[in-house]
Image 1 (cartoon, rainbow, N blue to C red):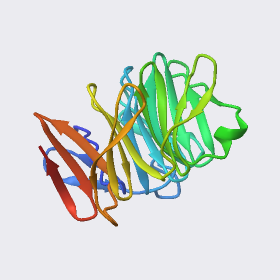
Image 2 (cartoon, one colour):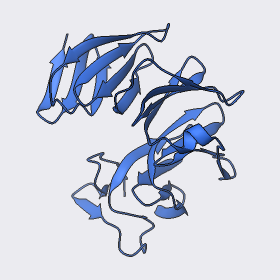
Image 3 (cartoon, one colour):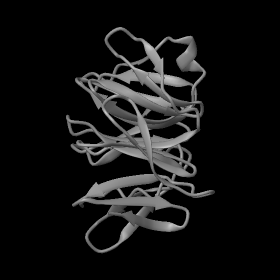
Length: 212
């Protein structure tokens, strides 16, 4: 069987070459904490992490099955160096993908944040939260408030550019941490963005938009 994750934000789906089988949570029997999957993330070690409303699971490629990992209401994940960073409804965690050790980052300010999205930014992490934009330095543990206070749905680093999405704006974050609005629309509910061949693809509640 070939496993392909389809991020419809609801289910993990298995593709066997002929049809899709939707794997939903069955009282934890199949390794999922919850059927509401918020994000899929593959680290550089080849682990596929399944981040759901009620916990974190990972797909074991060697055994071909999903295994439960940790009970936390996860939101997003990013890798910086040899550590994984997990954003949750109440702060951020680090995970060692080699031995699967997990630790809560002890910070009063971080614990107050719902971290919807995490992205790499100049050897640091930029966090999208319900209280706006923050920058986290993993070396000294310092948290710096950004210039945006709106709830942030998604941050995407394409390797060349960093985009920030709120409910009604798509913004570009430059290297000086300044934000410029690319597109704005009331009740746009922007959720994701991708940049390909000079065209910006934006997912929102009205469908797929493009800006070139």
